[in-house]
Image (cartoon, rainbow, N blue to C red):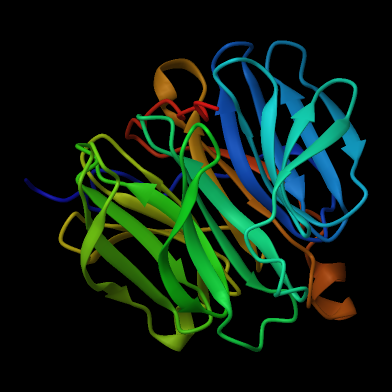
Amino acid sequence: MTPPSPARHPAPVPNCLVACRDTLGEGAFWDDRDGTLIWVDIYGCLVHQWTADTNTTRSWTMPERIGFVLPRRRGGYIAGLKSGLAFLDLPAGTLTPVSNPEPNQPDNRFNDGKCDSQGRLWAGTMDNVMVNPTGKLYRYEADLRHAVADDGYIVTNGPTFSPDERTLYHTASVTRTIFAFDLEPRSGALSRKRVFHQFAPAYGYPDGMATDTDGGIWVAMSGSSRLVRLSPSGEIDREIPMPVTRPTSCVFGGPGYRTLFVTSATVLLEEAVLAREPLAGALFSLEVGVQGFAGNRFAG
């Protein structure tokens, strides 16, 4: 397979969809049922929903930091929060707590999560102050039974899967490392952990990820004003500049899943940088010339 090249794919121009000035926008998910994009502002304790047909945005305030929101097959959403997992009802905005896997880790919180095609939830926890390696990657079944799939993370991020779902990718953001695991689709067992890509410091910190149909892994690089695409063998084969320092997550959506939606953040940016970046914290869309996959819903 010949990787994409800059000549074949000129750098697209990011389009600002919502100038929301999120403190820490994250967790983008495209919902094809109603043509909406849902994402969160973790530090702002907000859930946002943008509707494509009307180009309108609705937001809900949560009682605590919230890392992700994913739809459930039976309706409603599952959310990862500071206090654990909860079912979220929208538009009411009400939360029903359902699981706290770390009652003895009061300084941890859920950060990022994705579901596989079996409807299992893969969700990571992290140290809320980003110092201690207390974070874990959890696998949740539909009945909320859960197991630790991996541990030792300071900041967990961006789970995503290969097109055949036989590989799971997971990020240790602080060490700038993306790991790959063999994934047994039926049981959800992980094995053969290895480094998929180790980023140089100039690239900032790998954050949220998305997979295209050619097996490329798109990564939002927080701190370096760019998105990168990693080939299936783990090599950087595309870089796309962004008008903000901290792009934070990405997801394919829109017609044919050909649009890449990207969240961003203002956190940790100095006032001079914020003055130069009026779109910091905004939601963007880009036409990157490749196609992605529909997002999976939690089976529980």
